[in-house]
Image (cartoon, rainbow over all chains, first blue to last red; front, top):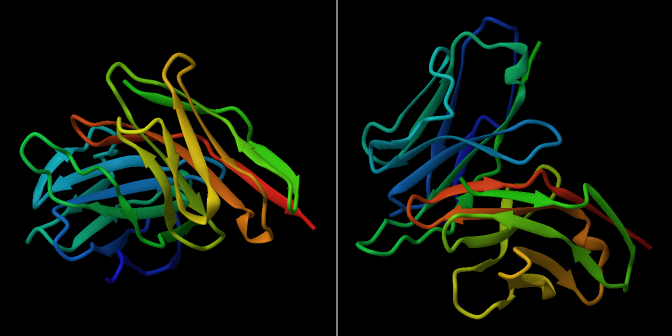
Amino acid sequence: EAGVAQSPRYKIIEKRQSVAFWCNPISGHATLYWYQQILGQGPKLLIQFQNNGVVDDSQLPKDRFSAERLKGVDSTLKIQPAKLEDSAVYLCASSPSRLAGYVTDTQYFGPGTRLTVL
Amino acid sequence: AQSVTQLDSHVSVSEGTPVLLRCNYSSSYSPSLFWYVQHPNKGLQLLLKYTSAATLVKGINGFEAEFKKSETSFHLTKPSAHMSDAAEYFCVVSDRNNNDMRFGAGTRLTVKP
């Protein structure tokens, strides 16, 4: 089966510019996640969607970051305006539907988008 | 909230010798625990996971991990390292109620010929 797709793979922008990342999860996966991985650190969850609703965005810097998943499939993460400290790899992951009384919690990751802010 | 501590930021072994990557976790609930591997410029790949079944979990590529509740540990081992094992390894703890996964800082494994 096809994995999680992300684009672009690399992006270089100047500070204060805006940027958008796209993610297409594994077909049939209802839950989608965006992570930020700063060099030398483990991934940190930014936002979690269940279908097209937000489950957790407590660690998303909402003054500059936004994300949407309008039709419950693809998702877009946007940064506007970007800061130097936003330089990182942005990972998208998906997991199967949450069933009643049971959470299938294995997450499958895409290759990531490496963002450099100059 | 749950958290993970990977005790070594870098481990270096010779090819053919055993691998031990250490992980301790903290969780208020019965956790799910995972090990993921990340090769350069590649996505994170699941090696194995523990979800309250057998405490000794076998994964891909000869890796295994043992859940020890009394020690709050989930160390990753492999009997014989291969050059292709060189990568970054992440221990992850998840609260099964909300799928909130917390990653460790990672351990970089170097394999010398």
